[in-house]
Amino acid sequence: MVEQVLWLSAVGAFLALDHSLLGQFMISQPLVVGAIFGYMLGDIPTGLFVGALIQLIWLGVIPVGAYIPSDHTVTGGITVALTGMLTHQQGFAFGPSIVFALMIAIPAGTLAGKLDIVLRHSVNDRLARRAEAVAENGRVPVLGWYHGLALIPPYLKNFLIYALWLGPVAVGALHLFMLLPASLVSGLGVVFWGLPALSFAVLFELATRDRFHWWTVGAFVLGWLALLLWPGGGWWIFSLAVVGAGVLTWWRGEK
Amino acid sequence: MKPEDPGVTSFTLLRMGLRSFCLQACWNFQRVQNLGFAYALAPAIRAVESVRELRAQALKRHLEFFVTHPYCASLILGVVARLEEKSIRERDTQALEANRIKLGMMGPLAALGDSFFWATLKPATALLGVCVVLFTPAGKVWPALAGPGVFLGLFSLAHLSLRLGGVFLGYHRGLEIIQDLRRLNPQRWVRYIGLFSALIAGVAAAGYFQLRHPLLSNSHFTDAGLLMVLMVLLMGGLRHGLSASHLFYLLAALGLVSGWLGLG
Image 1 (tube, each protein chain N blue to C red):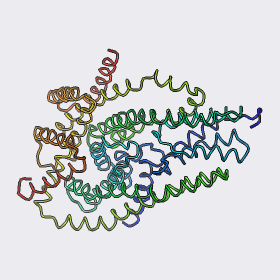
Image 2: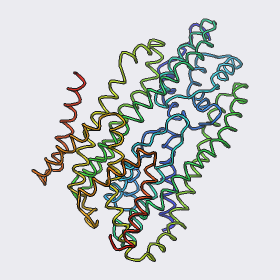
Image 3: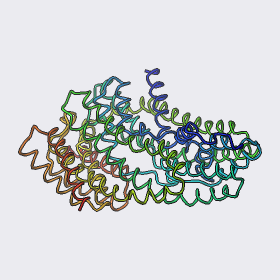
Image 4: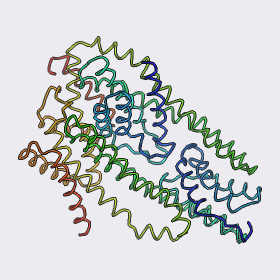
């Protein structure tokens, strides 16, 4: 158990660096973190599904300029791991488990974002000033060392947050979850039922921002009708929709 | 720099491109990406300036305030490397010009990167990846894993091309790159991709509300109509400035109250 928590924390902290500091290859996105953590916990389908849900909920959050949003990498990773612990290791129902895990994990993402700001103020500002002094002497390789040093505090910060949330906080959360009366667990199930509504509210809002909302509504109605006429054809209807959307986009663009 | 020196080579540009992946490692509130920019530019400075003091001067100049979109910085790096090389070869004042041009390019490229990569391409490719996961029949793990693959593959194709190719393009085209970008008309691509993802979002919502994922079979209601009503209410919340996190906790509070009242 402890070994697993340490491994998850080490990998999660590394993936979180991709969020804004190193690479930004998008391996820190919840969909990818979900798959990796799912693999590490031996349950890829759950990891993928939880990652997909979280990816949709925070799809509209973008790190523009100096704005540092909550770290959804950390939120996603902790949610996947906690859901795995609650469902696989404790045998709780999936729906209430994911909602409970998300309720516990969101503050971790917020804390990671806030501490990021603190580190940038305290450590990075100081490192940048020292690097300027070094550059005056023409010591180019040392500049790189200062640059690399700046990655260590965020890694340690993310590692500690993961370890804290997957260790003591997870143990406390498991006990709390077991103490919950059946009626409240049932209420968490209702929240799980409503999560797709939140995800797609975000998507529709994004479409409205781009003034494409009527196209989204049209695609929704067409998709709805197609699925009514062909109930088992979800995958094929989605594939056709991708091709159709591509053709329509090209046609509108050419006009 | 001697006239026979090779100056900035393809290898130097490749190193700059790779170093640009660390542009934000020491992101600070005083000069933002200054250290990252100087770190990425260092191979070019070292290639063209052999005098240690002058190298130090050049690097110090590039430790001034710098902020742009991390993916678009490679274009500026290429242009600046070309100007620095020219100024050192000819010993003229273009070095100061390089700083002015750098400052002039960073704002428009930041806006371009934010609107194209963050606000358009990332949501579109992530949505496609999510749809692959949600629409894959139950029990098929490998096809579902194509979801993250589709997302990373499509997004990487665009950002890696720009980040690695951008340094070469910026160096070889110089200031012409601004005209090249204008001709490319990125806003048109933003509109294309925005429309595409809006259409996919509609179909995905229809499919998800109607089909339900196997992992959702334990949920208490299956009435898609209720979900749609809830979705419209949540959209209202988003429009009134509530974040997705706030709405989630609101939803959680409502769910817990409904469970407590025996409505769940």
